[in-house]
Length: 267
Ligand SMILES: C[S@@+](CC[C@H](N)C(=O)[O-])C[C@H]1O[C@@H](n2cnc3c(N)ncnc32)[C@H](O)[C@@H]1O
Image 1 (cartoon, rainbow, N blue to C red):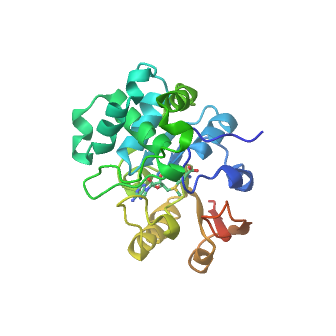
Image 2: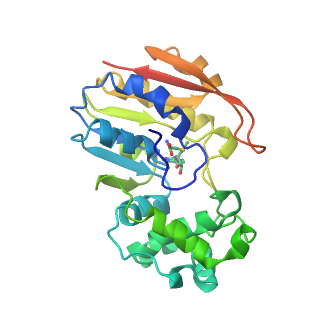
Image 3: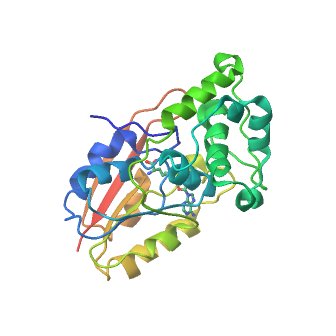
């Protein structure tokens, strides 16, 4: 059965989950599952099914995304009402700045993420320098009817898969919690998405990640799985024990066909 991601997201691993599992299943599930680039969490959800007893540590640089997982998907805040999606509320959520994150309620942190994303053209998360939301509103969809947004919120509410440990921040903060026997899945941003919003992801970040795998994860006997653009095999093949390349057909007019590299290291 195909698992559906709780929200649309560039780079969600929905279609290659089946290619990741043969590597992941070489793990005994006795350590922690550590996912520093959580996105939709679709891989984490599969892990919760395959390894129901394993502890999960989940992180992402986007604090609003983490709040959506933690409070909305897990249903720890009040369910949605029509007032949450009024034009005034949508405007308010879009204008929130990143430095206001801690001054709004947990419910608003989570709703801000989903309302902005569900109402955006192409469901694309794009923010300005200060964190205000930049993707235009998709008014064509149902004429911008708030009831459409409400339905989307209702569909995702309470669909979480367990109250794991969530953190927002740079990937290394999450990854460095790994110890012997744990599994780290590294699905860093792609050049096409330029790191989402104002987030950067360039050669410096790739090399820091490579260096961490080489000098910390492998010597400490941590399982490592990376999924990266195909060209990155030139780098990873020196370290990884197993790998595959997958041809990804284009997903509509806006994306070109590309090759995905998956590399795996186990103790
Ligand atoms: C390719 S997506 C992960 C997709 C995810 N595996 C899924 O299936 O939905 C990359 C994620 O990394 C996050 N991100 C970007 N830069 C980051 C950083 N420096 N540290 C941690 N997360 C980061 C983005 O917010 C995005 O959710």
